[in-house]
Image 1 (tube, helix red, strand yellow):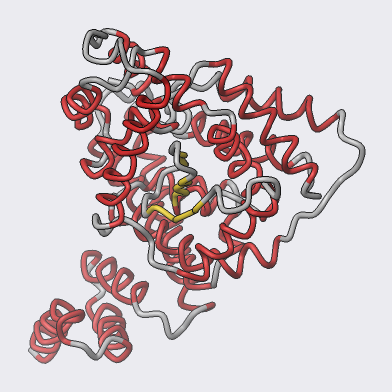
Image 2 (cartoon, one colour):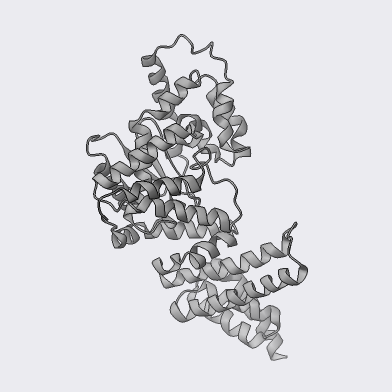
Length: 393
């Protein structure tokens, strides 16, 4: 179930428990529940612990909303998807996966401006009021969080944040307000259109028909690209991009998002972002290993996939190409980052399976030299022992 349907479910909640609540009490209830859920998030272990990054994000929000001193607090949420959400008390949670997909501070500001406008425009209260109050909200979100793919730690707060998906009217209001904020702050007005255009390309390349909850009930992404482009065309001049500062401060978070995509086995995302979109150029040389892994994972996923309409010859050709590209990128990683251990083991496994035992032994040996901790190199050490015995016979 997409989160697009959550607002519909909330409209089905009986209004009897909250019909007599006046605005002040309703707001108090929202704030009380929000504080409780935010404490749960803080204790969940899902926040990305980087004070310098949090301070950087906070500084951008303060620049975007100079008329709202102390209104906002920004944290980074450890999640590899392209998402962000705001809550009524001024909390903005920005996903590490979003940082991975952005090029500069101006694009970052465009999304922070959007989420901040949800807060200043009072969209949470206005939406809850329209849904007849907060009664039984947490029951509904708890029931459908798993099917919607929401982490359990966030289930309770969905209905009280921009995760729930506001109306198109509110989303357009946030788009327009966020655009005005970045222009007034001196950022490049084209940044928002660029950020959404990348998302559109990713959804197309990965055959995703519906984005994550940041876009679940928003206007179609194509429409948002057109809207942002139209707004930018009416702007007077270009503004700041601050690319280098963005890359430096967000590096740890972007690398962490890469590692999460890798652990999830999302080869398509890795190839698209690092290869097709060229984000590898914004990262250290050893990040090329994740592009190699992306090709490997994509090839393995294609081998297991069902419903592929291509012929078997075409499917095999694609798998072979992905396998060759993976080997090429492993080798390039070793050339460009010779002290980075993982590609040595990956190549060693390839040569082991292909029957080149001397080459496999040399690569496993180098991997162990670079990874002296036996807890991390135990399997490689076993392979070395086995290969030494086989080659001695």
